[in-house]
Image (cartoon, rainbow, N blue to C red; front, side, top):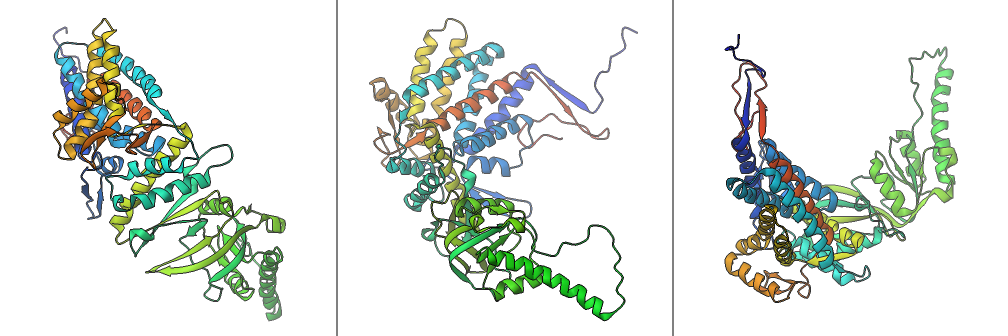
Length: 537
C-alpha cells in the first residue's frame, strides 16, 4: 500500500511550482509592459487592433490596447486590471502604471536569480513604495484652482502624443471650461456630468463645448417646430400614453355608440394630459418613456417640441443643465419644475439628426461635441479628451501637481537610493531595483523619441544631483529643461495611483509559487501558460 501513488488532483490538471511558476508569471507580465511601452510619451507610436469581425481601432491609449487584445494569461490579466483601475481612478497614466509594474517584476527576477527570497523582495518593494509616496508629496507643487493657464497646460500634457495633438490647445481649453463649469460649490467634480457626443463630418476644429446637452434624438413629429427659443422644458419619466391594463380584461360593447365612446374617452384622457403640460408653461418635453401618436399630434398642434425614449442618464443630465426637475406624476407638474434654456433645436449633420439644448444658465452638466472625418479619428479624439478630463479633475481635486517629462521619476529614484542606504538588510537591494524601475519611464520616453536613452538618463541624473529637481525631458526641443517652466506638468494623483497599483500587482505576482491549471475537459490535455496567448481556460 505504501508504494501506491496518491492522486489528489484530476488527471486533466497540470501544476507548475516554485521557480518555474515565478518565471512564467514574470515573463507574461513583462510582455504586457513591452506591448504598451512604445506608446509612451509625445513621440509614442500607435497600435492597430483588428477584431475577428474586421473592426479596427487605432490608438496609443494603454488601457484600450490591453482591453481589446483579449489577453488570456492569468498573470497578464492582473496587469490589465491595474490599467483599468488607473483609468477608473484618475483617467490617465495607464501606460505608466503597467510599465512600472512590468519593470518591477523584471528587476525582481534579477534578485531571485541571486537567491534572494520573494518575501524579502516584496518587503523591500513595500518600503520603497511608501517612501516614494512620501517623497512625491514633498515634491508636489500646490496650484491655484483659478489659474486657468496651468490647468490648460495639464490638459495639453495629457493629450500630447495622441491623435488629438494637432488641436490639443483647442481641446485643452474646452476641457478646462467643461470641468470648471460642472464643479459644484463644495468643489466636488463628477466627470459623468460631462456628456461626450460624436458627429462624423467637418474637421476636429469644429469640436465645441455646448452649455447644455446634445441628445442623439429627433422630435417625434415632423409637424413640431424645429426650433424653440426661450425654452421651458418639462422632464418626464412616465409614459405619455393611456395606461394599459396589466391583466387580461374583457370589455363588453353592445353598440357602435359604446365603441365610439370608448375611443373618445381615450382621446379625452390624452388631451387632458397634453393640456396639463401646456398649462404648466412648457414648450419642450423630454420623456424617458413612450409618447402616444395622438399625444404627438396634440403636442405638434400646440407648438410643443417633444422627444421620447430619452435615456435616464441623459434625462438626469438635462435636469442638472437646465435646472429642471424630473417629474413622475403629471398632476404635480408646476412651472417651478420646468428647466430653462435659451434655445432647443433639431439639427441634421450628415446622416445624424440631433437635438441641441443650448444656452443654459450656469449648467452643472455640459456636452463636448466631437467632430471628425472618420469614426477612427473621432474615437481617438474621445480617448484623448477623456484623459484630459481625468487629469484636470484630478489636479483640481488634489490641488497638487508634479513635473512631467520623467523629472519626477528621476528625482524619486535618487531619493529612494539614498533611502536604501539607510537599510541594513537585503531589502536594500529591492529598494535599489525599485528605483531602477522608475527610471524606465524617462528611458522609454527618450527611446520612443529616437534619442539615446543612456545619454539622456546620465544627463538627467547629473542635473538632479546638482539640485535641479524639476529637470525633465522636453521632447519638443529634444533637450532637458525645467519641466514646470516648460509647462510639462501632471497631477500628483496620477503618479501616486500608478505607484500604488504597480507595486500591489508586482507584489501579488511575486508571491505566487504554485500555478494549478485545469484543462476544463477530461478529453483535453491542458497546457501551462508559457506566453500571453497560451493559456487554456
